Amino acid sequence: MSHLSTNLAAARAPTSLVVLTVACVLLCLSGVAFGSSWIPIDQVAATILGAGEKTQKLIVLQLRLPRVVIAAIAGGAMATAGFLLQKITRNSLASPGILGVIDGAALGVVIFLALLSDESNALVTSIAYQPVAAMVGAALGIVLVFTLSGQQSNSAIRLLLFGIAVGAVFKALVMVLMLIGPIYRTSQAARWIAGAVNEINWSEIQVTALLLLPLLVLSLVVARKLPPADLDETSARSVGLDLPVFRIVVFALAAALTAVAVAFVGGVGFIGLMAPHMARLLVGRSVYAGLVGSFLLGALMLVGADLVVRVLFSPVEVPAGTVTAVIGAPYFLFLLMSRQRHDG
Amino acid sequence: MTDDLAIAVDSLSLGYGGGPVLDGLSLDIPRGQITVLAGPNGCGKSSLLRAIRRLHKPSAGKVLIETTDVASLSEKHLARQIGLLSQSPSAPGDMTVEELVRLGRYPHQSLLRPWSREDSRALNAAMAGTGVTHLRERPIGSLSGGQLQRVWIAMVLAQETDIICLDEPVNHLDMAHQIDCLELVRQLNRDFGRTVVLVLHDLNLAARYADQLVFLNEGKLAASGPPEALMTEALIAAIFDVEATIIIDPVHQRPLCIPLRTTAHSVG
Image (cartoon, rainbow over the protein chains, first blue to last red):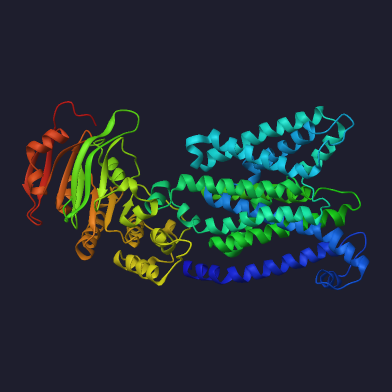
C-alpha cells in the first residue's frame, strides 16, 4: 500500500502543478475580466497579448491587470514563506501570521502613518514609503520572536507561543495608536490590517517583483537543504548541515518574503497557513514541487479572494483579507483538531 | 602521526559550564579497527565521541583526523570524513526509508553537484549492506526498533566516510537486535575496512566486539588496549566500583565480566 501511495505521489506532483498553473492563469484572467464592465475572457487574453482597442487596453493593462498581478505575487510569496516555515519547524501550524511577522508589519505601517502625518491629516511623505515601514516592522517582529525564544528557538511549540505573544503585544500597540490617532491614519491603517489589495501601478509592481524575485530564487536554493533539516540537530550536523544557522537563514527568508508581500497588500491572513498545507496534500513530499505548488495555491487564493470581494460587495471596497480569514480560521481549527486525533 | 592512526586525540579538555567533562585526554584510535569507548555513567565517553566529530568545541587540546585538525575543516568536509550516529536520532515518521538513507549523501552534494549516479550507487550499497533494501518505500514511523536502527546505520554508511562513530547504537534494542546490530557493525569494519568508534554500555558486548577497548573515568583516560588486557578484576573494581569475576567466554574466547557486588561509595 505504501508502495502505491509513494508512486502515486510521484506521478501526481507534475499533474497537480500543471492543473494549478492552468487554474491560476484562468483565475487571473477572470480577475481582469470582472469589473464595472465585463470584458470576455478571450478578449482579456488577447489584450494582454497585444491586441484590442485603446480604451480596452487602458482598462485591462493599466486599471485591472496590476491589481490581479500584485495579488498573485503577494499571495504566492506569503504561501512560499509559509511552506518554508512549516518545513523548518516540522509543524504544519506554523505560518507567517503566527510568528509575529504580519503584526510587526502592521505596527510598522501604523507608526509610519502616525509619525509622518500632519495635523491636517495628510501624509508629509510619500505613501510609497509605507511598504518600507511594513518591512522594517516585520523584521522587528521576527527578530524579537527569535531573540525571546533564545536557545530553544528550535522548539517549534516555543517559537509559536512566543510568536503569538509578540503578535498580541504588537496588536495592542497598533490598537492604541489607532485609537489615539487622527481619522486619516485610522482608516488607512484599518484597511491595511484587514488586508486590502488596492489599486496599484506598474512601477510599484516592478519594485515588488525586483524584491521578491531574488527571495524566490533563494527559496529554491535553500530547498536543497530542507530534507536534511528534517533531522534532529545532531544528525543534521553529522551529515554536514549546521541546522541552527540554516534555521535562522530560513526564518529570515520567510520573514523577508512575508514582509515584501504584506507591504503592498496588507495583513492578509491564513494564506501562509492553508496554501502550503494543501500543496503538500496535492504534490506529496518533494520540496521543489511543494514550493512551486504553495506559490501557485497562494496566488490562486489571494486573486480568488480579491475577485470574491469585488463580485459580492462592489462598489464598496471590502478587503480581500476578510475572505481568507473567513475560510482560513475554520481551516486552522480543522488542522488543530485533526492533529489532536493524530497525537492522541 | 603514524600511518596506522585514524584519529589522534591530543590533551583534549571540554566542559559545559560546570566541571570539566573531559580533562586533558589523549588517545590514539587505530585505523581499520573497532575501538569501543566504555566507562561508568558521566565518564565522558559520549562527549569524547561528540568532540571527535566536533559537535562540541573543546576548551583546550585538539582532535586530528588523518593529521588534520578537525577545527580547520568545513562542516561538509568533516561530514565526508566522519559519520556519526547519535543516541536518539529523529526524523519525521512519514519520511520513507530511502529518503532518510539518501540524506547520507548530502555532504557529497552541492549546488553545482546535484544527485549523481555515484550517489545512487552509494545509496543502494548502504541499503543492501544493512539489509533494508526491501523496506525502501516504507515510512520510518512504521518500522520496528531493530529495523529503524539498521536504517539509521544505513544513512551513516551512505556517507561513505572512512570513520564511523556510533553512540550507544544498541541502547534501545532487545538482545537479538543488539547482536544483529553489532554483527553488522563488525561486518562493515571487516568488509569495508572502516574505522569504527563505538560507545557501549555493556562491558561484555564491548569485550566481544572491540579490537581496542578504552576505559574512561571522570573525563580522563583510565586504560586502553585489547579487551583481554583491560578486563581485569582490579581495573573493573577501580573504574566501575564493582567487584567482579572475569572468565573467558568459551564460545568467543573473549573476557566475560560477571559482576558480584558494588563496592563502597558507588552511586546509582
